[in-house]
Image (cartoon, rainbow over all chains, first blue to last red; front, side, top):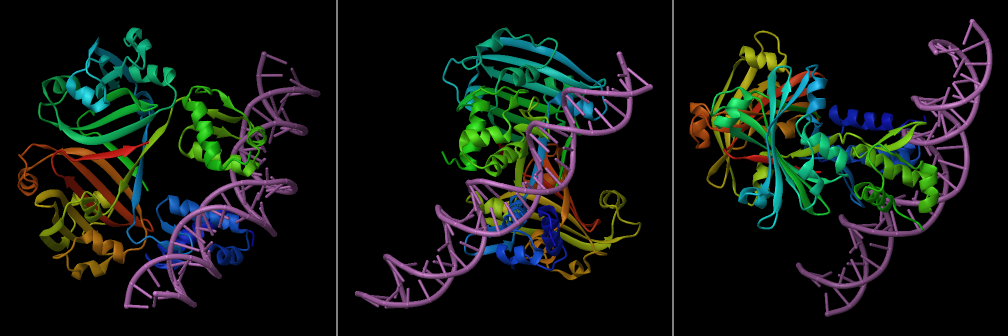
Length: 229
Length: 229
DNA sequence: TCGGGCCAAAAGTCCAGACAAAAGGCTGGC
DNA sequence: GCCAGCCTTTTGTCTGGACTTTTGGCCCGA
């Protein structure tokens, strides 16, 4: 036999999608499957583990594996750099700095980032264009207590995200997606009408538990994020 | 030594986040790491493989592993059943059917689902409440050519999603997120003002390449999807 | 200098066996 | 009947070894 873990995974998935093994019903134990496929248990284990990661099956020691009842499905959205995102669509990327200043963080930013009163931040507003059309409005706050070098960084030619990936090691982040209405400023920058519904992504990045940067990305009218699973 | 793959993964990740191994720079080969950690190469392999899946490092045969330059980060959003989503928030779930009919799919739905002209569909509109507040507006189209049993299913007491997970085996799906403005009907159902920005999720589910169902989920004003990575 | 072909290095996979860790279920005492 | 504690099943992980596949880099010839 000598089935690869990919073949085993595909075969099991096939039995599930064809309805051979129904939601809630148990799947044979690893030993049995290993014998059936003529491979080592480790190989079956890898196939099953990946199916569990994909949210297709549930596994419990002693109780065995079963097809998930409620398909707790998860969509993976890639979050590339805006430049990449735009260039991958075959459009020309252009960047424009709108505003840049250093000062004390306003209360709502302090609350979001968990900063102490009077914390110094660098505030940058900029725009990302795909060809001639505005694509994304970026409103970024950088915690100068963690990243003092950001005070003097030059964001006139390229965006703060590109500077950040080059200067900050890997971090944790919390990301949230919502809908917002264009105010006058956003409408002017994104070439839409005030009140238009826009997709907004907010991300707060932390390093060793301290907030490094908070960014609010508002996309052009009609933008959609797509994923497959 | 006898390090577990979790410990190895955490240690490598630590070296990366601490900046010890910088973006773009190479990571020692599996053999070397295995020796350093005093474990088998398979164990190191698993740690590295997961780091690659998480988008932290890049791996290539012969070339070795290196810390990713552009952190192609991916956010995972769980998409549970609405009932679960609401009950997990500690609110009481309530369901209400608004409209249900069988007929020919309008053109825009046919285009979205890839159906032939004149295809018969069941169209269901319903609402999901968290406690007394409207939470989500569901506009669903079910392809009766694939699921003829859906013609006579009773959606007056519980939503079509619950019926579907019980009657359809696992499927592929395409999901997309965008912002939309409330029209008069949505405003009335979701207790918001016309024109309010609302978060909209559209999902088209396929089985063996044929569209099973297309659903448009519009959330209450202010809803946000959150993920961590 | 350029290109093709070969080689070796690195990741990718697999195996057979072992032990670890949950956790369902049984049994016996109350 | 109920509960605690043990037993056993099942998954989770690890080992040391092997073979496979990919591919960067070297060598050599044109």
